[in-house]
Image 1 (cartoon, chains in turn yellow, blue, purple, brown):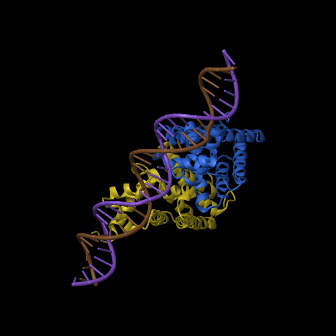
Image 2 (cartoon, protein in one colour):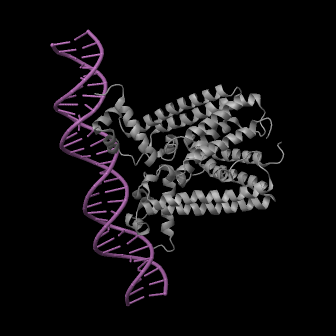
Image 3 (tube, protein in one colour):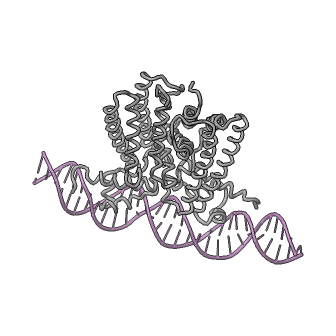
Length: 205
Length: 205
DNA sequence: TGAAAACCAAACCGACGGTACAGTACCGCA
DNA sequence: TGCGGTACTGTACCGTCGGTTTGGTTTTCA
């Protein structure tokens, strides 16, 4: 029928939306196949079992988000000719991106998995962990560049600071979901930006 | 048999631990009653259905955490004779408290619910929202006191700043769970403390 | 044309939430 | 002393649903 993993992608799209709104366990295969207009057998042709789906979901999420961050901070680096400016512009772009999402940011699969991880096998948890470490490496490198140019006004560990970017996003998403106020996540990103500014900016204004 | 809601508390204790480690949906009633050494009938005597359990879980979580925060920031206010000092001390005490928890902080039911909320009825979601708003009010009041004494070095909304406290906690817990590194949450709280310091402190050191 | 890829149909089975109901042990109170 | 409410136990049962399997069918492409 369909060529080139088209059905597979459809399954992942539908599954992702469902998982983010209800949790992994509450998302049934039956529901996914109905929405994808295939049969249960079709699903199990593409995924060995439900764990394989979770794995694919996280793996794809990492890839998409990585590309998004690549693009976003590349643009930021072009706009600002200085590592600190680039970071500040990048965070602003990120906040704007989140803010402009219709219906708010859909949420993060990694967070979703973090609170349901006993459901998953080691592969899935390991993929989840890899995602977070990837973000740490990314932002750590950027903060290293900044710290090479600007002295810090408070002595903080740069790995921890890098984790704060992911943490602020994840935390913002939770508060945002709990209150059903989509704008909160981007506001929190802007607060993080304010911290980075105060931490590295040479002159306090 | 047991008087004074002893069994009820036992059910809640066991359910809480299970929900935090596996998610609500993956926690079966059968499992709870086995660990609590009661029968299924006993469970349904105390809770109309599983949703009632979720509700009670969140309600209790709010109460316990509120008392904990009350105690912690009361102590902080005694130790520092200034709203800013009190906040900084309070955050340090909080970080220490989290750090000293054996096996790391167990996690937050509110976050757990946030990513599985379609499972729950309106009551549960409303209780969850109330919890987050309660935290906002609490920290907002503290930041108001600070801002009345010290000018801010960056103009930020105090409600958003208050949300950042909860957000940093929740985000830290997620990163911490994903990486299985219990120390991360308290580190993130200390970073938030650093931000508060830079934001309000009269002299940058 | 034939094999591999992509999918359909149907059935299985165990788990889980929830119900119903009869019975029991304890406790305070009148 | 006994009455009634509280706090359960025990058992039996039901409907649903979800993951998984087996076996067969169509489609695609080399």
